[in-house]
Image (tube, rainbow, N blue to C red; front, side, top):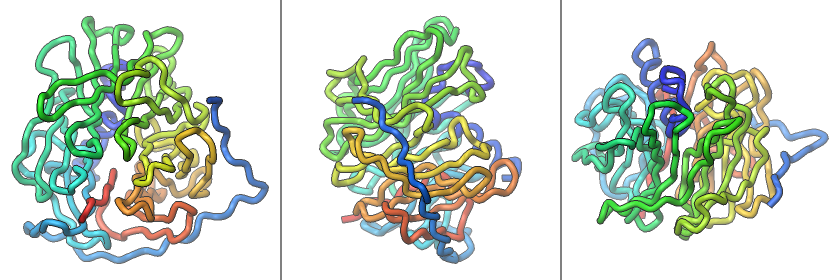
Amino acid sequence: MLASRKLAALLTAILVVAAACSSAAKSSSGPFASPVAAASPPATPAATVTPTATPEPTPIAVLDGAPWIVYSWGPGSGLSLMRPDGSDAHEIAPDLPGVAEHPDWSPDGALIVVNPMVKEGVFEIWTVKADGSDPQKVLGCETAPCVEVGGPAWSPDGRQMVIGRVSNATGNYQDDHLTLEVLDLATRKTHVIAATPPVGAEVVQYSDPRWSPDGTQAVFIVNRYGTPPTDENIVGSSIAIVKTDGSEVNAPRILTEPGLFGTYPDWSPDGKTIVFSTHGLGSFQTTTKASNLYTIRPDGTGLAQVTHFGDNDTRAVQPTWTPDGKQIIFTHITPDGGWGVRHTAFIDSDGANLTVLDGPFATHPRLRPTP
């Protein structure tokens, strides 16, 4: 979408991937923190591969309280479920418009929010029940100057979402105005929590917001591009935090230096740690640069590398914490041409116990919260 429109109006790195992933599937398929230096970094352990059954061709009951992984990819709705061992993979939500990407579970595990492209260049926010039924539109861009909405994530109490919005009155990327906003689901009212600065020598975009467990903060990405912005001229991306009450609209707190290219952050359930990946799939779909998982404290200290893959190697991207905070679930990519082979994987926060599910081609996995 960024390449076709040649705008910085990309709502999130999320949205770029949505269009690209769908097309590929159908065609084939503080100061800044510094990276941790080690004289001899530990090797990422060899993966334990868990075999899975062939994806089921028929609907499968999704019972209340049962653990499921929701993920993106597929020729239909683009939204699917599999069990934590990779079995019973099946597509859901056939009645959703367009191709749904980047799912997030509600805190009670009853609903999934997605960001489908309902028609070319038009993204909306929808929810479905855990089994994919009862699709409901939450938000779209009904009137100008709104251009796009997306990147939704639930608040800890399930009553709000943090979203992204692009507004533009002229169609020129230099007039893009990108905001992160809190949406009240009962009233449909929003308030801005972060707003990008005006376009100057570079273009700044905010993306991929996630709530802190206490609901007071959101973590997100600060992407920086040359002008005009393209995936090829991204110059850095940092992990940042902002208060959700709107008191830091123009003053996000930057946790990581831009050259680390941090992406896709997620807050641990205990609020003590943030996980993120480097060289993620937004602007680095087919990169040969190292893509690894890191953790960092919300105050910007304690940066620690979790995986230790190198250039032209396996990639670890799109991490989120499991609901119990014991592991990280992420997209594991093995080299195989430009796109690589993308599977769901689990790993401990110290880099131990890497397990790759030998199941469906999948991206953006999230494990369902269960009682």
